[in-house]
Image (cartoon, rainbow, N blue to C red; front, side, top):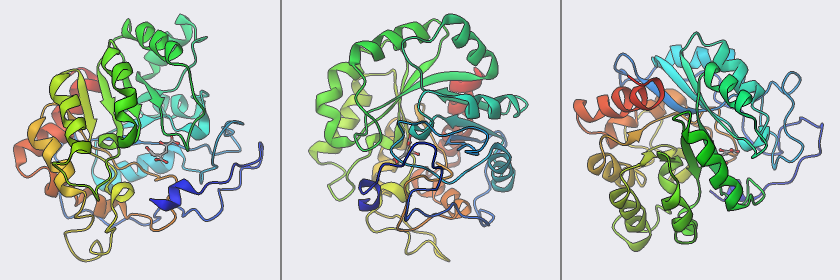
Length: 314
Ligand code: 0GY
């Protein structure tokens, strides 16, 4: 979305939300689609609160605060059993807010952190004990400064010993350049938001075919079939009262679910940083799921079997 590209860098210590950004949806509806028992919201964040867990000096944006209590209340309201909390760039490599949320979750949350090469084994072990199961490498240029690939590869090699995986976030246009690095990663690799396809392009066109090939040729690669609200060009206009919002994203997500049913997971992306045009009602986002996972069996894999296997080893 254009709004994601027009950021102004915040001043360190000023925790005022980046101008123009929307707050998360305060009173989400109750989904019509009833989530199966054991369903996992496998991509969400906690932000601050900034007064307790300050945002990183190097951040490119300041989000609205989104606390662990608010995340857990959303989980219960929507009918999820558990959460996977993913480190966002606004907290840099300081994972304290995330780890604090994991510890408060009574085992109902796992985490994906951002670390530097200097991380010690004792620190990795402490994070593992709190529920961390992966590291995130972010290649979205508007969100992060460049990290040398040898540093990332060294981290991936270290975390393999804890049986963690690597989550990668990138835009479709950058996949060719990143291909060799991604395919050399020694762990399970989980792609955020289907590698951010441009949904204006054909679902069977060269850009998305490359992503499908990436998954087809590399059985260690998984995908989050997430973020219709970020990827959609037609937008949410049908969302309120109708069933078919974000229709332009459906063919992309459905294709991935149909072809790789055992390597897909789903999440809300709450509290939806960087949105200016509209803020999704998380209840209605859950109602998007049956459009991309068309059978009960597929939905069970997507929401229950796959994330529980990846994050809880069950
Ligand atoms: C997301 C999306 C975004 C932000 C981040 O780490 C982040 O700052 O993930 C985005 O702006 O696309 O995955 O929630």
